[in-house]
Image (cartoon, rainbow, N blue to C red):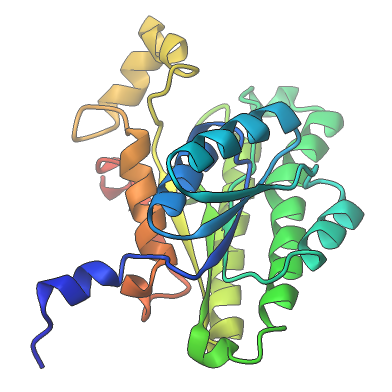
Length: 261
């Protein structure tokens, strides 16, 4: 059966879908929120900083999009469950909040270990669990479908020095993605991850300008450059959209070839 080009393009739209984006105040989360609103979704923005969310919502509204703000610390399980339970409905979760504290393995303290594990693993599990409960409330879920996209990293597929804790957490979320993809498939809720390489932003530019670190990164990317936010956002939009309706339990690695070596 042939498919008209217009029909294919329509499958990348998110019209009449409600999407929750964690870590929406800046970086990948912010860019995803803008793109999803442009694609027709009603976006719910969550992060700890109210001001950043309000500014983002105002920008989306000014462009004709729909955005709601729900400030929340995703490491607070009670707050997460309350916030998501109060949503009118939910079709898409972008599980994006995370952090990294690079340092030698022997220097990692229990406090820093717990801090990264709590945000990168425990909170993503709690957020996903609350989101799935909300999705399952929809009587037409099996026909309507649902999508979870976990933002991981190329470091969820390889190892790297001074990133033992970060690599461990991202490998954990890749495992969670596979398990949830299998368990939720009968409910037509797809679960995938997007795993970017280092991404160039105004905040990260000074870090990559440092001679040794910048060379270390560039030497490991066969395409010879850093990722751009729109390249990551495009993968997230695809994974969340009906265009990826048969894809679940897998990872889209946006790394310029880093993990292909």
